[in-house]
Length: 341
Image 1 (spheres, one colour):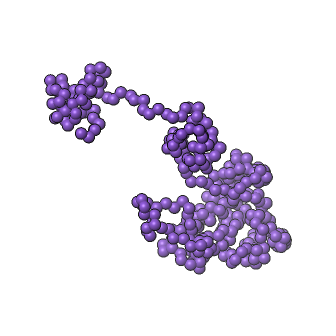
Image 2: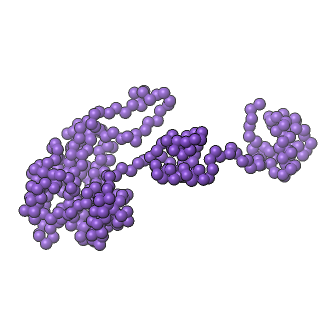
Image 3: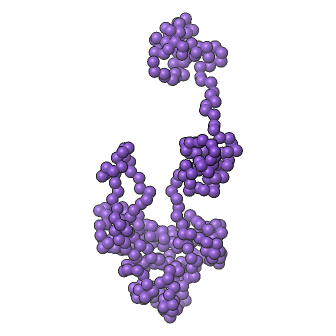
C-alpha cells in the first residue's frame, strides 16, 4: 500500500472513531491505511494528547559552524569561483558534494547573479578621479549646465548577448529553433559621435572608419562643435568635454580648439560613469534592439541611430545631466572607485 501522509483532519477522525469503539483494522479498512498506522497514531495521542508529528532532528550537518564561517571567508576572497572549485578550496580532505556547497551559499543569502563590468582602475586612476570630483563637489546646476558632454560609441548590427537563455527540453540543444544564429564580428558596426548638454542636443555624426585627429577636426569639431559654440557670447560660452582618446588629445586637435576659443574640461581617465552621455548610448542601444522589423544592413542601422537620436527628449537628457552632483558624490564616497552609474 502506498505510503500517504495523514492530514490533521484525518488524524482527529481516527481518534474519534477509535473512541467510539472501532478497532484498528476496521478503521484502517474504512480509511485505506494499514492498521499499524492507526495504532501508532492512537498511542501517540495517549502519550502526548496531540496528533501532530514530533519535531525531528533531520539529517546531521556534515560541516560545523566554524567550517561554515571559513567557507564564507573563501567566498569573499574568490566570488567568481564555481561550486566545484569552492569545494576543493574549502575542505580538500573531506568528501563533500557540490550540493552542500550550494546549500551553504543559499543559507548565506548568496545566489549567482549578473556580473557588473567596469574599466580597470589602478590606484593612480582612483586618485585622479577622486581629485577631479573633490574639485567640483560644490558645483551647482548653473555651472554643470554649461558643460557639453561628448563621446563616441560603436553599435553592432547583430548584438550577441552572452546572458541569453532558452527554454527547452533535455537533449534538444541542437534543435534548430533552440539555436541562436550568429555572424562574425556582429555583422559589422556603425560608430557615431554625439554631444549633449542640459539645454541642447547637437547633431549626431557618423564616423567613417577609424577616428583620427584629422577626421575629428574636419567632421566633428569644425562643422558641429565650433559652429555651435560660436553662437554663444564669450561671457556665456560653453565648456566642451571629451575623453582622453588619442584623436581627442593630438597636438593638432588641441591647437585647433585653443585657436577657436573652445574651453575644454579636464577629464580623469577611465571615468565613463561621470559622463551622462553613456546612458544616452544605452537608451539608443535598447531601442535599436527592439525595433520591428529589426535592422538588416549597416545602412539601416545608421539610419535607425539617427532617427532614435532625434527621439531622445530634453527631459530624458536633463534627468541625466541634472544628476551630476550625485555622480560626483558617489565617486567621493567610493574614494575614486567604482560607482553604480
